[in-house]
Length: 266
Length: 241
Image (spheres, chains in turn brown, red):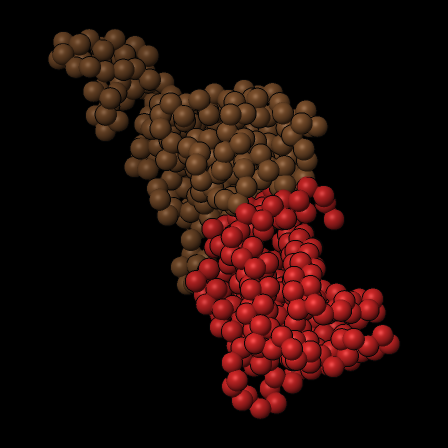
């Protein structure tokens, strides 16, 4: 669906991103993580041709949808009129649009002006318009940044159901490990403008953490990595006897991300 | 043209108070104020009528549209709409059509108010048609200028600053505002040519002037080429091979 070869993006003299080889298959959901300024959004923008780049980006479809982090629509009319205008349709005559509005529970917001609705509703409105076009390839750039926990969780559940139903290929830039855990098939980590990891989260966990890990006191930095199944009981007994609060994981994305960033394999 | 997009752009203009005030109220207000001093001088009334008739597309585009479009550009709406498949060219076309409808509508309202208030006869159909063509060509020229300014300057404050300077500049140079002597510069503006030509021929039945139309078309063609080059450059191949 998407192939990137020898991609290089520069801002002035500074090289912001280099990707030697990246391939995303149809129906895959890729979670992209990295620190601020690492090159995540640059990757999306170069795939969309919004910024100049060297190299090759091959996209096997014209049906591309994009959801940016910040949303702005005109304030001169209601949300319904904006949606109808941009999609060139009428809500009461378009069952596909009605279904999407119902799916994202947006009906009550249609008569409002865009500036008066919450951040979560703003994202839903954009998603309705993006998904109306039934994109085969969808880019989501930090779509839940600024949303409260409940709105984020509700949106993720809705998207999970939608992606499963439509087999959409998704490239999802995010700061939230929880989104990757719930939605992504593969995790792509960018650091200092380079791709430093790209694989299924479970495989990355095995590669960088090991068999399992005990996260003590819910702090990723205080975790105990376990390499063999038979070591688990001994570690658990020790933590219990020390009176520590802990949880066991075999796929915590935040832990994977932290370990990948350290660059030390298990 | 896509009907819902056209309706969208019409609603967008309708929701903008600056466009409504300067596009619809400014010309009748000023026309009645200035015309009141010359109500018994038909030739002067003709000149005042045509002067403020010309300000309709000028105000609609330079004051109203420039504020609306530059804010859309600055806040990323233009790009967002492009990502929804509403291309920049299509946006420009639908916006232009909506503004043209507003200009024609405002010109009719203004003419009705001015001519009936001062009890002036309605020009004949040939002159009305020429006036309508002039309004459409003027709208197109101003639209391309503001579109180009917005693409190049991007920020609302910059675009609006330049647009307002141009707006008052054009009104001063063409003699609509103030009595500043600017030599022959005004003669090159279609507005000045239009007012000078038609003020003496407004009551004629057979007067046809192709000169202003042709001059406007040449200006339009030149501007179109510049816009095409600029938009083409900003939308062109992003590869840095």
